[in-house]
Image (cartoon, rainbow, N blue to C red; front, side):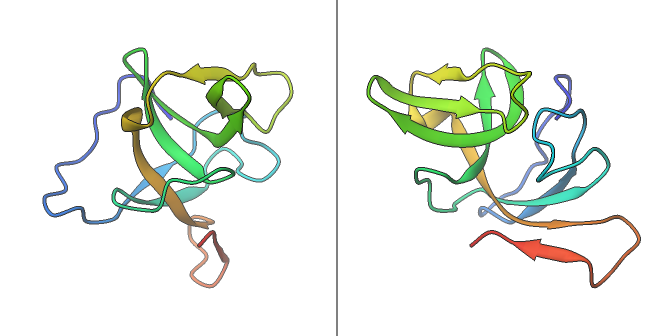
Length: 109
């Protein structure tokens, strides 16, 4: 996700879509794919989430560890990031789609 991106104004918790940037979540999520985010989705261990981490929007897998929660990149080249508060999770990824292909999608809930 882009660091200078702002979340759309989704009054009422409406789902919205973002394009994946970078390779931190490969191979499950590749650059250019579209993810659908549910702002009021169930935050649980293993969920793919959009979080605000140190002023930057970040897309990672939420993991519970002995010391608390962390944001985990699927690509091992990126480090895990500690998450101080679950309130920083702003949405749960519920679906991904390939741009230009209506039927090529995968659901995560």
